[in-house]
Amino acid sequence: MTTTLAPVPLAKAYRLLNYGPTVLVSAAHAEQRSVMAAAWAMAVDFEPCKVAVVLDKQTWTRQLLEAEGSFVLNVPCAAQVDLVQTVGNTSGWNVDKFDAYDIESLDGERISAPRIAGCVAWLECRLLPEARNQQRYDLFLGEVVAAQADTRVFRDGHWDFSGQDGLRTLHHVAGGHFLVIGDGIQGKMLEPRA
Image 1 (tube, rainbow, N blue to C red):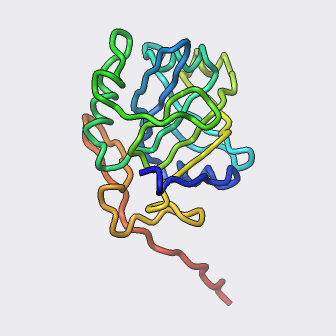
Image 2 (spheres, rainbow, N blue to C red; image 1 turned 60 degrees about the horizontal axis):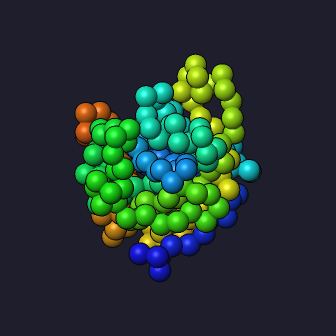
C-alpha cells in the first residue's frame, strides 16, 4: 500500500475533503490512541488549508485530540465500510480500538496521531483552539500540516475512482447505511446568451 502513497501539496489538500466523504478521526496523547467515524467534516479554507469536524463531548477521541492539540482526518474507502461502522459505534473509553479490531496504522509525518492504513487519503492537522465553538457546538478547526493520498485514486490534484470500486470513498446516510462515490463527469462553461 505504501508504494501508492504520495504527498499532496498543502495548497490542494482541501480537495481531499471538499466532496463530503465520511472520515475516521484519529488522535493520540500520552501513549493512548483512539479512532472514531465522523460524517460532519469539511474543508473551510484553501491556503493554508483548514478543516472543520464535529466531535461529540462524550468521545474518547475528542479528549485525546484536545489534550494533544492535533489529529488526523483519514478518508476510508468502501473496502473499510465494516471498520467505519464498528469504530463509529463503539466507545474507546475502555478499550484500545486499534488492538481490539486489529487496526493497522501508519505513523504520522508531522503529528503523533496514527494514520489508518488502507485509507485513500490522510490530512494531518494541528488543532486551532476555539474554546467557545468546541464547547458550545462541538466544532473543531484544524490547520492541515501534511497531507497524503493513494495515487491509484488521487492524481494531479484530482480524484479518479475509475476501475477502483473497493477504493471509492464512503458517504454516510444514517443507521449504518452508506453511499459510495460515483463516476466523475467534467463540467464545461456555458456560453452567455447573446
